[in-house]
Structure formats: C-alpha cells, structure tokens
Length: 100
Image 1 (tube, rainbow, N blue to C red):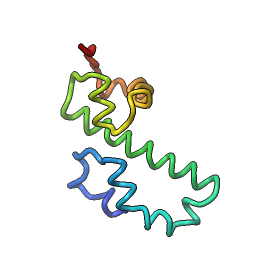
Image 2: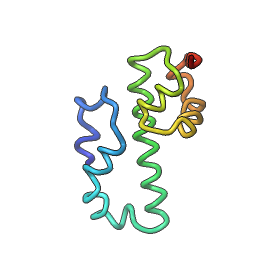
Image 3: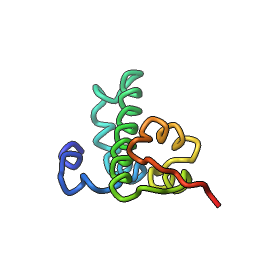
Image 4: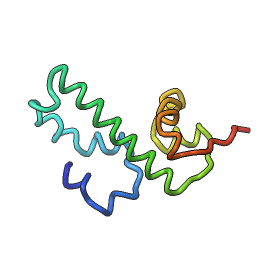
C-alpha cells in the first residue's frame, strides 16, 4: 500500500476510496497493531481523510470551476460530506458554480 502511495505515477490521479479500500483490505486487516482497536479506527478514518485531501489537490489541478455535486462525485463522497471538505480546502478548488 505504501509503495503505491509513494509512486509518482499516482500523484496526479484521483484515488477512488472504494477501489483503494478493497485493494488493500487484506493488508489493512493484517496490520492489527496499526488499524486495530479504537486508536486503529481513528487511524483508518485519518487514512480516508488523507486520501480525500489528496483527491482535492488532484481535482484542483484540472478544475477551476465546478459544482458541489461534481466535486462530491470526483471525491467519491455524498454532497453532505463534500461540503465541509470544500470549506476546509476552498483555496484549492476556489470557485464552485451554482447548480442549474
């Protein structure tokens, strides 16, 4: 998992969380000392947040204007979860356009 994350070829690609989590499900499960227990659940949540933050940076490279619905789609999140992500990273994806 870490080798894939560090690869330069993946730096400009959106990482679909569903695909990522399925691909590395066994590896995460094998890391019980890292992802087990309450602290592990927090680390897993942090991993998902880091993947989402990576995706915001990738999206910002390709878009200067997009709707919140499209941002949510690109981040592989429901709109309700994408709204606070945009609020925290608004400087990256600077201009949301209203939906029609």
